Amino acid sequence: MKCPFCSFTESKVIDSRVGAGADVTRRRRECEKCAQRFTTYERIEDVLPQVVKSDGRREPFDRQKIVLGLRRACVKRAVSNEAIDGVVDTIERELMESQDKEVSSRLIGEAILSRLRTLDEIAFVRFASVYRSFRDIREFREVLDEIGQKRA
Image 1 (cartoon, rainbow, N blue to C red):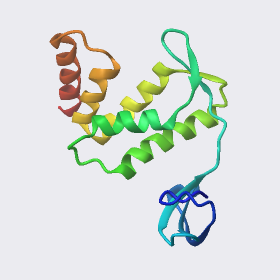
Image 2 (image 1 turned 180 degrees about the horizontal axis):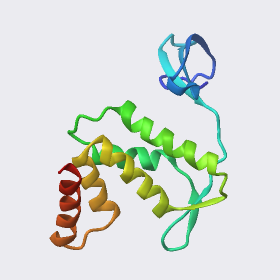
Image 3 (image 1 turned 90 degrees about the horizontal axis):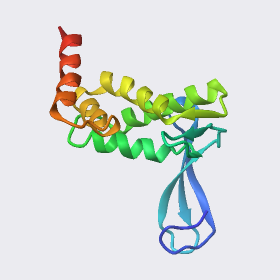
């Protein structure tokens, strides 16, 4: 493992812990050259489907794209990184279990929205406004009205 401080390639593992859900291993390491400590995360590389974009392009599933989109939507909201990771973990697990070779980006977006709605309504509206590309205030109001009806 390459040290992020001095780029030396030898380090020793000081501590290992299994993360929530037992699908991530957190390792605390110490560089054998500069003695700086750093953390690495190990995840089993899963076979995830290709994502078919709305214009027909295909690209590999990218967990980080979803995480970054959710974090942007949750800025200044009381949503923890663990909750965001939980949403992404659930979506990944569902995609792996489906065993589909390809999945539409629309399906992924709707899965994100359905989970985000229960997590934080403001973050849901933020994400929906970008994901659904609202053209005017009327479309924005429709989503707000939909949320209001579910509360009543």
